[in-house]
Amino acid sequence: MALTTHRIRRLAGATALASAALAMAACSGPTAGSGQSTTPPSSSASASASSTSLATASASASASGTVSAIASGFPSKTLPLMPGAAALATSFDASTTPAVASLVASSSKSSAAEMLDYYTKVLTDQGFTAVPAASSTGAASAMASAGTLLRDFIRSNGSETATITVVTANGQAVATVSISVAPSALK
Image (cartoon, rainbow, N blue to C red; front, side, top):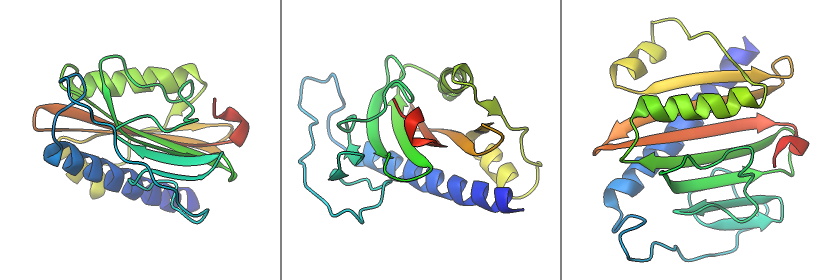
C-alpha cells in the first residue's frame, strides 16, 4: 500500500509539473530556434526551495531548477534531452536521499508515443524495469482516455523509481520524466 500511495503522490507531482509546463508553452512567446532569445531571468532561492519549482532557482550546488533551459549541473546523462525536443523545465536535488530529478521537454516533431518510447529506452538502458500498468479503473482510466501516456519504472528492488508522463497539446508532445534514485546515480 505504501508503494501505491508513493506512486500516486509522484504521479500527482509529475502531472502538476506537466500541466504547468503546458501552460507555460501555450502562453510563452517564441520557441527555441525562432531566432529570438528565450533565456529566462535568474534568481537565487533559499535551501528550502522546492526541487520541482518552475521558477529559476539555485538552492545549492546540488539542487537546482530552471525554466526553458537545462539547469546548471542537471544530470543530463541520466535524463538526456530527446534530440529535436526543447527543454521547458528541469529540476534536481542530489542533496537528499533518494535524489530526485525531473525534466519537462516538448517536441512538435515527435509524437507522444515516440517521446514515451525514447524515454523508456533511456530508463531501461539504465537498468529500470517497467511496472505493469495500473488497473483500467479510476485515475489511470481517466488519464488514458484524455490522451495521457504514463509509464512507471523501478530499479534496485523498488528503492529507485521513475515515471514518464506524456501529453499532447497545441500540436506539441510534452514529456515529464521524473526519477528518484541514489544520489550517486545522478550523472
